[in-house]
Image (tube, rainbow, N blue to C red; front, top):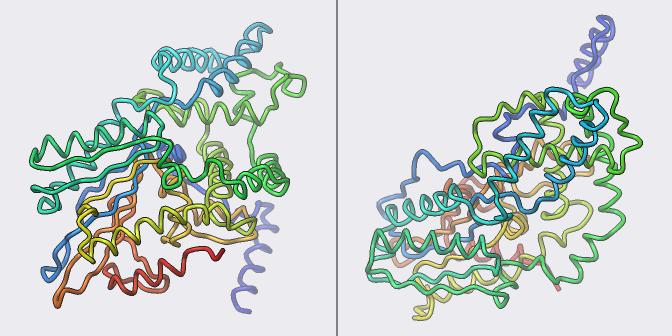
Length: 422
């Protein structure tokens, strides 16, 4: 009651001053963060230590491919088309001409390698591998590493860069690597799942995303480059599509190594956050559990089941289970898995989608080269414990508990309860 009265007083004061009330769902993230899932990997400054009483004995790693060139020319083409139209009509602004040159630069630097792992992405994977083998050298010396990848070339190359770094740092390691469609149930479960396909094409999802975009997508930045005379209503491409294309092109610059562009010349901080919120909500609804559907998380069950089975097999002494198990997939691999596991910051249910950007942030969850590591430790009396890391930073596993080290029997029971019931 007191809080409510306080809020009413504040609103009354703002009304008296003729000032608008602040939107409590508005965000003010940096441009680096607003790059969202295209943000380059934020390598940790420090590697977490563990108690002397514990000995690391196994790692389950699920990683996204590293930084890549833009997935396709689609957004560049949309943006180029609008800018060329404005140019032909004499409406284009100096900022628009600058943006057109930037899009041409992007296309030239991609040089047909759309979606391919780029040099930054290769370095990201080598860095993660180097930190892993430096932190847990005993798991690699004269040991076997099993690695699988989706059939996507950028995932295969990520696996190659990662394992190549391991071999460079310890050539006693035995590497077993494989890729292909046979691993799709584990790392590309979002392909070919009928229930998930039905949800992705549902009217509920389409309407929610459409309405959110219509409400939150700014268009002021388009006038800044296309000019006041450009008629957005009569153009063949919807204005919101052009706006999101501009955002996507700009957001992908750092991932492909272009860091000399002042994005504020095209987007204000407010516009950056608004456009990011649209992309973020799309990731959230399509790839994690939400009040619309639990299916986007449930489809990760085969991968979670494999992680549990591999850990059980290792503890039981199964010689076919390696000490280090690497899996390379996509952002669409990690988001469902992390949501299914209820990893902090990766699981959020609400009917108020304006609040998603405050609690579920793709740049925290799936930057380029994002990864989940589950490290198994052996403790006194041969008891086993696990520590979960998201992007090489320890996170709690059990909701309501801050414990970073969880008895495997407790963790196993929890993870099995996360599995969907069929």
